[in-house]
Image (cartoon, rainbow, N blue to C red; front, side, top):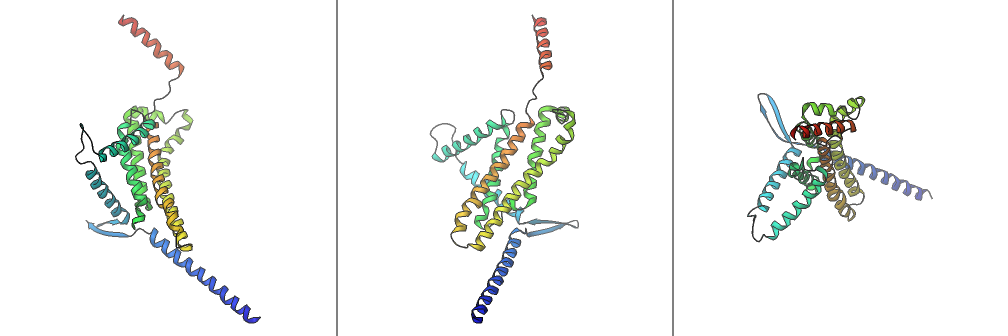
Length: 276
């Protein structure tokens, strides 16, 4: 009896030690994967300028996307019979353009190529982990830079469409008392875009690492289709979709009050009488 208890005790200790070791290894693995290492650096006037993994991988993605874009758009035709490659490209562009046009309208549809480029970059950045590289979007500095770029574009479109005075007046809508909240929104929007993208990518990576540690065969491959591919593309879609919504709101025409409409009608009638 005492022998059985001893065996059970030894097995229990072994299980506990094994769990502790697995926990330590998992923590080490997560720390190594989440840590963004510096690749190279140089000094200019005593100031150190360093480039980490997220920056270098971003350069690689942009270079590859540029080369692919050049190869795919070679020898395109305006008239005559087009190739299957060109037909597929035109179909993809028309579908994306139609989607964004429904959100943006005519005023900011010129930004559709930029939105599509950002969607492709974020999508590739999110799923590049399946090729053994660390996704750049796992670095908050990358997601923050893209978020700030998006909001700068939104504010630029708003000022260009409404003017400086009109943009400042927009902060007082619908009533002046919400002005501080509207001003605060300019800063919370990029933070929201940044943290949503960063948080989802890091969370998906952490979940996959936990699954690999517990069930190292079969299941990680199946779930990788969701966490590494589907979720990565979904987050790219959400980021660009929200940016498009912000752009549309930035140039949205203010609904005129009945009193203002009446004044406009009266002014128009007077003008018509004078011209007659």
